[in-house]
Length: 216
Image: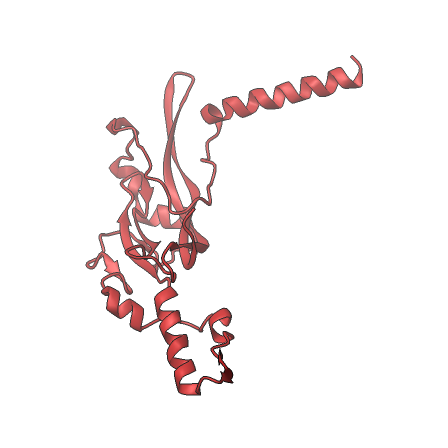
């Protein structure tokens, strides 16, 4: 077999493996697409973990780092945390963090025959108005992922979307940065006619920053 035929054979083998990996790969392939799409689960309870599979001590040992800011074993008393329950006026009047550089460096001087320099007070008011209008907070809420995840309650972020964040309107708040936390996923596969299930670690993305961006 010459080199060209060998390369073609290797290529076909890789393609074949890629097409079959859905059936043989134990770990789901991670995705950075945000926000996450709703996971469609097989409703058959045969794929659910049993009581003996939910030993908290053992699962904590398998999971390792348990970040209680984003993870909870039991249902949180308040589903909404942070600024999720603030109204639109609160969100507009109380932007958090550092003022964006593009707003801070805006030139508010105007040319009406003779150039007029904006006062510091007026400049500050205009900056704050633009900042509050274009501010895109991350809104956090506890989500129940179901019994096939451990811990099953995750504090997920989303971007404020009740209005446009630009003047004129058209731009919207979209995810800009994210981090990943580790969860355990109950994974079942058929092997030699028998159903084999186990907890495996998976990466779950959490939105940490939203930014005013083009709608498309």
